[in-house]
Image: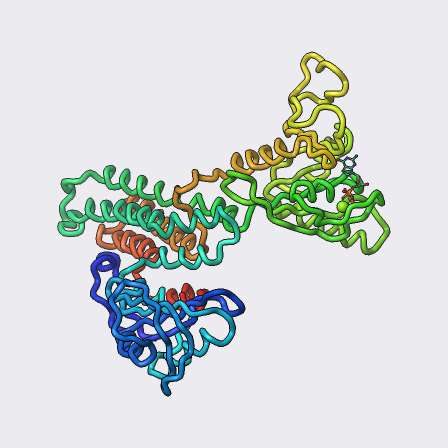
Length: 483
Ligand SMILES: Nc1nc2c(ncn2[C@@H]2O[C@H](COP(=O)(O)OP(=O)(O)OP(=O)(O)O)[C@@H](O)[C@H]2O)c(=O)[nH]1
Ligand SMILES: [Mg+2]
């Protein structure tokens, strides 16, 4: 596929690229359903539709009940048809959208009629690719369309919508401006390299470069939070056998997903499930594990190994115990296996106080001895049976994750894609290179400026300096057909 480079300057008011083909696709998932959408886009969209849709022509941007017929005039379906005249359409081209009845036959036959009349079946993401190349969306926004479709939770939905609204793109433009500013400051040194003292002091350039670098690193620092939003915070439930880990897992999940029994060693494998606490900025991926103990049982030993691996990959570990000293022992044990923050969970508290315990060693021992040291971890007392303390536990988990991973406020742009992370890393590295060389003053400005240019290019890659075919193909090949 030949791809014309689109620069950031031209993103917004670019003339349509002018694809020769007209494409057609079923935009909805195949299968049984009330309705399906067949979408057609390209220079011949209206001419081709005139062979399939009766009556024709239709007034643009108005939904109308029509008939769809094949080449022999046989009725295929009665779709609702809307015509969009380019550039006022999703792709920027002429678009015809037919809402047909769902199921296996009607949409496919309407689509086949369009192919017979001269349209070509679209490749995955091809509609959005055209939208990008026609300047309707930038590349980060196009990725947001894909992220919204693939979102597995409402936090990811929010992040994708922020990105689709241009939140990330705007942030990237600000960063790019900051680097361009540094370029402008050294312009005099480039033009008059033999002058000792240009109108701009060297320290002013260094300060501007440091400011740009900090801003880029600030956005880059949201990448771990982006990972939390995309995949959820991994919360591993650990402890010796029979402490009530699977019961806690089920109670937090609100359904009996894991097997529970009074036989120690019931859970043999790690089981995970996602919960979305109300109002939280990321989902929690709960992992129930096999009880940690020394064992000669081969299968149980395998389960313990799985638990240990899960601990290593956790964002938070819940160290469970049936007494406060068992909790302390569980915390010690899991800390040997993970760098993640640990929350102590005192299980089976059907009677007695539940929720976050005051930070004394043993609340059952009465008043704290004078000089008692606070614990370095919190303990939440819960009952999986009655549900007591579970809300406090969820709050404590969320607070622990936020404290460690610095999750930005909702609606702030965050980095959720590896492609953005690597582009920003490149920009930050180029800027660092510039700063180092500039500080030594060892090379002429025209040479160091190469690093600033490279930083600008890396930033533009995120939003749409889309000259590179493989970037496009990587982004759009993950899309569904019809989007
Ligand atoms: N009374 C009471 N019993 C509980 C509670 N939570 C778990 N139990 C009981 O404790 C026993 C063990 O529960 P599980 O949830 O299977 O414990 P586990 O830690 O997953 O055990 P393993 O998978 O063997 O490591 C079962 O008989 C549960 O009914 C609770 O909150 N209150
Ligand atoms: Mg279990």
